[in-house]
Every structure is written in C-alpha cells, then in structure tokens.
Amino acid sequence: MALPRRATVSKALRRHRKKVIDAADGDTPLPATPKDLLFDIPESFADIVVFDSGPGDNKLILISCHELVDGLARASMWLADGTFKVVPSVFFQLYSTPSTFSICDYMSAIK
Image: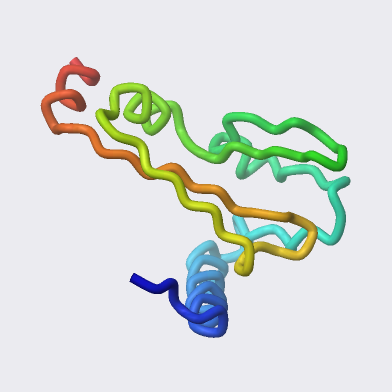
C-alpha cells in the first residue's frame, strides 16, 4: 500500500487546520508552525505532551495521553512508521507507533 502524495496530505491538513481554528472561535487557535527548535509548546496544548526533551539539535516531543500510553503498554503488537516528507522543515521525522489491544484489556484497565 502506497502512502498518499504530499500535496494530498498537505491539502487535507490545511482543511483540517482551518476547521479547528474556525471551531475554536479564537479561544484555542493552533500555534504557528515552528521555524526553529527554540519554541515553547503553548499551555493550551500542554496536556497532550507526555515528554519534551527541551531545546537542542535532537529535540524529541512525545504527544499522547496517559490512556494511550497505558494501551501501548498492554498491546499485544506494536507497529512503527516513520514519515519524513509531511513534517515541518525544522523537524527531521514524524514517528508514529500504532498498536493493537483487545477490548478485554481496555475494559480491565478502566475498572
């Protein structure tokens, strides 16, 4: 299965970004795309940042929530995907880790 073309992904992201900004009514607009590695994550997005290595050439940001991290810990299989072309130029790679876990694992975790 091939990945979608960059132009297709960019257009979809622009449409989604516009929807989010419009829906926010100015309360929580998306932050500007970083131009260098010396940027701060806005307070309104701090709850989804699990880890931020801070400024430096090897900056690492982990965006998730504790429920998803818990699901990853319980997962029977992890998948990994690294994407280079759709990230802002200040970053090198977007790395995602989708996983599978059964509903039984989820239900026992929330009890």
